[in-house]
Image (tube, rainbow, N blue to C red; front, side):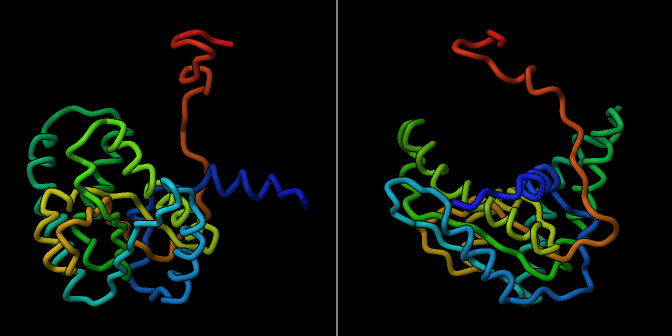
Length: 214
């Protein structure tokens, strides 16, 4: 088997960021590129290979307007609770970025809503819910990695789920199918993305038992 180019793979894995303010709102995204990235995402592992996922790709302006309004409305209380509080610089940057997306989501050229059938599992055990989400989250991440490799940016957002029923009616999603996110997709403006600030790995990893370090 031919070895991977680890430098390229590592660069992809360490520079796939949540992109908001650098999304290009003016440059169209080719449908073929979105489909190509989704085809790669469908190679992701899922429970018993049942492949119960579905993806709703939204490009019509009126629908993006409606989804953007649901997203903005869902964040009103969140911003109200945060306004006026003192926050570290990194938190202020994040809040500013989320605020920007709330104001501009409707302008992002492509919205992708990943879904998975069988939402009745959410009323069951933790085991069932873990398997449920484990059958779609790897695929969404693979989709975002594929976008990044093609010069496109994205972000995992869930705020519109506060109005999931309204979004389902807007998009024609059946009652037994759960939306898990809304992924805005656009080309990226500015310089190339770099790795994000992270604390050392040994702060988060236990060996054999919780809290034991190697």
